[in-house]
Length: 178
Picture: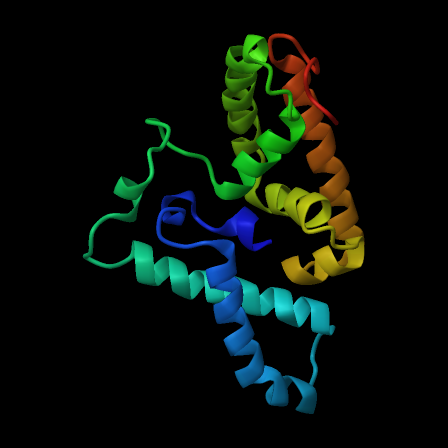
């Protein structure tokens, strides 16, 4: 979850283990309060802690008048999609690293990022929660604060929409794992 959501501009400054260390500190501080009144399953509480810690880290490193974090890592020159779009695209493209396929793979990845970005943000988030964070339908719906049946419908709609966007691309589904 952290690797998926850590802003790419921070890769030169932070590692996932740095964030995990901050989460562990917050968990130790907040555990007595959680145990007194657990309002959600422990796993979701830890996920929530990871999310709030990431928000603090992003604000600290990306919202200050310091050396711009984006200068520390070479990035694609255009507008970058959100981390979840990038991760979804990378997952669907696959891992074929043969040099003869590198250019085609890079082109498919950019097109797929655009397709993923065109999804409704809550649908993108549902795909991320279900496929990358491997939450159950009930857990994902709870995280998104929607009814379980609405979450299931959103999930199916997002998959169908993404599939239709991929099929509409030149080359269709070739090279993608759906």
